[in-house]
Length: 409
Image 1 (tube, rainbow, N blue to C red):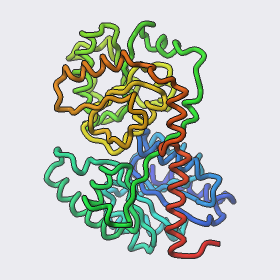
Image 2 (tube, rainbow, N blue to C red; image 1 turned 90 degrees about the horizontal axis):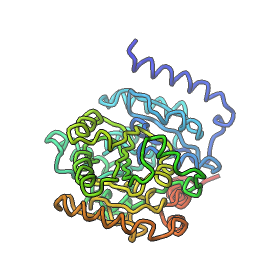
Image 3 (cartoon, rainbow, N blue to C red; image 1 turned 90 degrees about the vertical axis):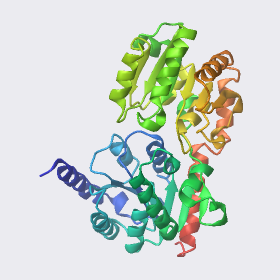
Image 4 (cartoon, rainbow, N blue to C red; image 1 turned 135 degrees about the vertical axis):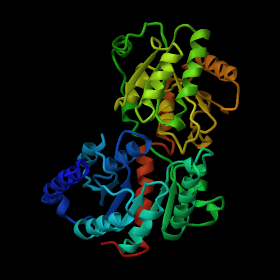
């Protein structure tokens, strides 16, 4: 038996136990099946988890189907949020996915809504239509499909599946206007199916203050007077770690008290480690891997947040950095919609010379704490990026979609 098949059987066994739970046997007024990739900590996955948690006390029941053969770090947290977790370990086999989706829909549904977070997701929406799921939501989380670095075959697949999204999706959401244009086309505003829904974050951790803010620095071997630049993001090409380290090298020369803390993991981690060594930054960089305490790191460790991504949908970590009151230097790939507190953020094009980035960071260090943290948190609480606001809007979208197809009890 292959590892993937054993993993599938273990999940199915856990599902049998879940099915016997009376709280899950009760038919919810509205049932939603989310489609996602591997559930490791990331912007999309964290937001989805928070939505599930916020919906626990509502008349919505949500489950998750992951299109992968690999377990995720957030699997248990998803279950603890009340969702049943299903798996189709045939990500490259549409017929296999159809078989799994049909079986899940019949045995554990029926589902009123399928909400796809798979990019582009056209294949999955077509399969959902074949299974008879009447409300099919495509969610655009990224601008990657417009990235110039896509290979020829990737462009062909993206073009085909994007056309299927427009054909088989009954509704479409996007985290930003750029993301909407990426998946739904330049004229997306002319189609009433498509709309922007900004991500929300749980602001509760940002209300907590550490009584010993120096403990984190001490545990990482950082001097008390260190100027700590933080970055949070998956270690993948679009996060631009090579440029990040080149900039850090220049900043250390300019400001000898500078240290860089990288939070996240991913496929290019080994390359990042090589770049750190090649640039002579071994003593100046701390690699923390995946962390669940990002708000605490932002409030008690970082002095500045650096985010030079090549492309982005709408990065939650930039929202979090604003909630923490951090000065931020980011690439222009971060959309203007993500800027709630303009005084905190400086955006630059990646075409700007390295010296311009060094000057931007230097200027940002001088304006640190220009706005009190309590004021920053208050502004975020009143914005679209509060998870309570975001979830309320999402559930209203679900409610209206279902109401248009059947009367609610």
